Image 1 (cartoon, rainbow, N blue to C red):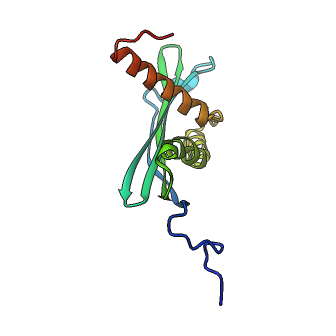
Image 2 (cartoon, helix red, strand yellow; image 1 turned 60 degrees about the vertical axis):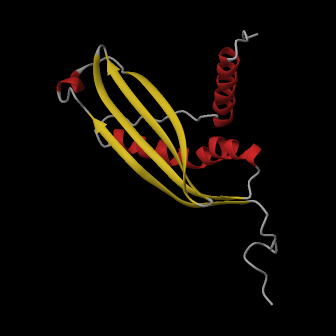
Image 3 (cartoon, helix red, strand yellow; image 1 turned 135 degrees about the vertical axis):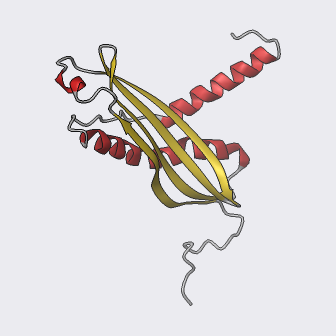
Length: 163
């Protein structure tokens, strides 16, 4: 008799973490001052904003979205604005509640983010400009920072002073 595809683990309560699909959910590119902005000689100043969200799609199925908004300016004019949302669908079952937020806030974005970086670089490259390579992100540090901000907010709301 053949072993099940679960590697021999037939325990229905065993945690399941499986990537179902990665996809580009949304992308927009704006060059509001083209073509005159291309004549500028100064290097652009680039600003990146990052956001991670998740939502339940079905029982045990979650979508995790990493959104990046990248703005490049030369002097006071926008050279380009790229907003992209890269998403992944994950099967997450039997994950202990205490670990679930860390999985969707650290593990899943680590899988999705490289695709987002490639798509942003490709979009910018298609403008004729050199591609922008988004920096590597430590999602664990971002997650810990968000937890610290939330706990500080709770402390402030209960009248406690931060230490």
